[in-house]
Amino acid sequence: MIGRKNIVFGFLYLVITAALGPYMVTQLHPDVGAAAQERQQSMARLQQLAASDFEENLEPLTGAEIARANTEALLAQSTFDNARAPIDGIKAGPHAHGNLEALLNIAVGIALVFIAVAPIFKQVISWVFIVGALLHSGVLYLTQFGVTLGGLTSILQPIGPPLVLLGLLLAGIAAAMGWRGEPVRD
Image (cartoon, rainbow, N blue to C red; front, side):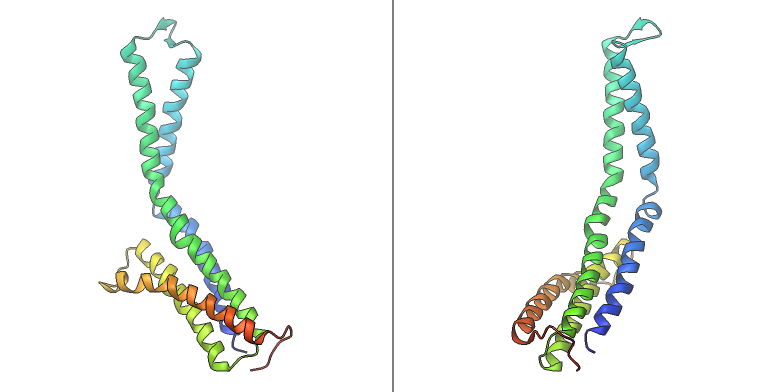
């Protein structure tokens, strides 16, 4: 059964990509917690001052003191946003794409079971999806961990998305040509 390798690959890749996302967020970017705490404290102080009509210890604050509290809160927010940016990149990049490409492999593996076309055509579809996932999100994951393949990274990674799209096109053509609705033995 030609689709089996995509189903197996898809489930295993999904486990890896689903597990690596939270790991990368917590282990590769631990500074976010400190930035969040600093932001919380600065914002709480500013909120408390605003609620008390900018008085502290029953004394009104000067304009410079109010400006300083506001500036501290803004800087803490900016520090937090800057610390979050790499995490948002992980979620939007390798994590999201890896999960999607894993699920696409599972779906195409199941679909290939129900399509009756030449086995070589099914093999091409199968391998295009696996290689496309590895070249796209797989290389994105490697770069997040600092693994560069020399100049190959910038050559290989852009090949992945067109391969996945090609796989979708080929799977659609194969389904139009040979959908059977019941498992087909290869």
